[in-house]
Image (cartoon, rainbow, N blue to C red):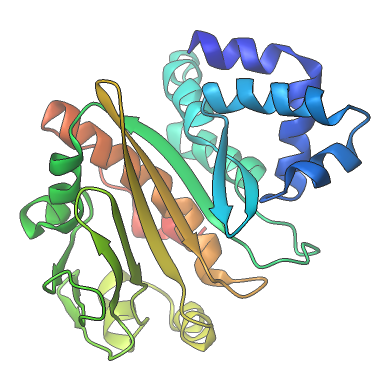
Amino acid sequence: MDEVFKALADPSRRRLLDSLNLRNGQRLGELCAGLDMTRQSVSKHLAVLEEANLVTTVRRGREKLHYLNAAPILAIADRWINQYDRRRAVALADLKQALESVPMSEPTTPTFVYTTFIKTTPERLWQALTDPAFTSRYWGVTFETDWRPGSAMVWNEGGSRTEDPAQVVLEAEPHRRLSYAWHTPTPEWGAAMGVAEETRAKLAAEKRSRVTFDIQPFGETVKLTVIHDEFPAGSTMHEMVSTGWPHLLSDLKTLLETGDTLPPVPAEAWQS
């Protein structure tokens, strides 16, 4: 955690994080325009923030977009806030709201981006993302598919079986990259997961989103970047996954590194 505290100690870097907190997914030029710093200074500060895993970059064509990454902040919460008897659920909810939400005035569609480092291999991580024996342990979900681009996916979750022609594998490069369309919020899924019908109806009315897992070897670890995007502005699904993904990915990391899993999150917490 030393590199995180070092990165946060500089006021200019905190201003960059504040800027991304207000509007995530900015290009370098946009960050420079909003702050009284030269392009070179901003680039150097961003490099420090990336090294500390506080900022994640995503390539979109020729553009390089910068996203605030909550993983190190959540790790600090686990390490320090719990030491002073703060309720974990409350702490994570507050951090999620502060670091991952997109203001309603945001002109671009919201995107969830999260990067974590796991002490495992690309092959083992790929297995954890695709093998029902793994996914059922940390996610409670299993998939029926051959993991080929264009292939249909059946989601099994909470005793509910969700099938839809639009649920397909989008990209599949074993041990490197996986992308697929998000599941359909059917009435059966809502009932099985305890999602209120009013909320489920909002989810069903939204454009379908997608999730992408980018896997990169990083020394003795693997760098996993999760990008969940293609949400409409003001998306209810975006709010829900922004709450759920951090715990789910922490559970994945814990399972791969220790063989155990974290305590489950109550269903109502995913809807907060």
